[in-house]
Image 1 (cartoon, rainbow, N blue to C red):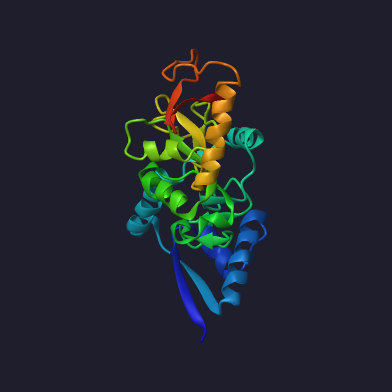
Image 2 (image 1 turned 30 degrees about the vertical axis):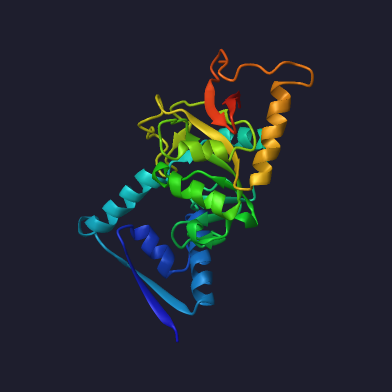
Length: 262
């Protein structure tokens, strides 16, 4: 049975493009309107839009801004390019949206016409190699999910040794992590690039190559030990520090792991 969705928008241009299924002034908006209508037709849905003055749209406006400010921080594309050049190109961006996805295939938190799936936490992650840049508050759940699904991923997370999730992060390393170059433009909001992340001066973000597969963890451990102590060389002290800007990440499988430059 056909269904109807009624939209109330405080943007008159958006209302016009939805109701007219496109427009002539903006090719981007026209394409998006056509995409919306194509999805609706496939689902047997009729959609109409009505203008709602901004002064009456207080709740939705607040919720939209609140959501964006907390979840839509995007890693600068040049940094992402350096990451995949150094490690590998993941298949799926697991925590993204049409505004900030780094890869063609992405999973969104909410229904999104461009997303391959919705709600990453309900999926089986060992189906792909993944890129994960999610809200920090979710890191413990994400790390447990990586271990549970034996997933392989590149995770963006801060160097915060005091956090409860940090030992699990180190346990699942399968390559040496890299600190990211942090400037005022390293993280940005896709809808307002002038806004700076409040912690960009103090937060040390890193890319962590992880796997929940124990065999992959052990392979990395063996390779790492061989690199540190070539055959015939006496084992060095494990509390040795490395000078420079790329300090100690932590201890993984009994071995001190130091950050490498990106």
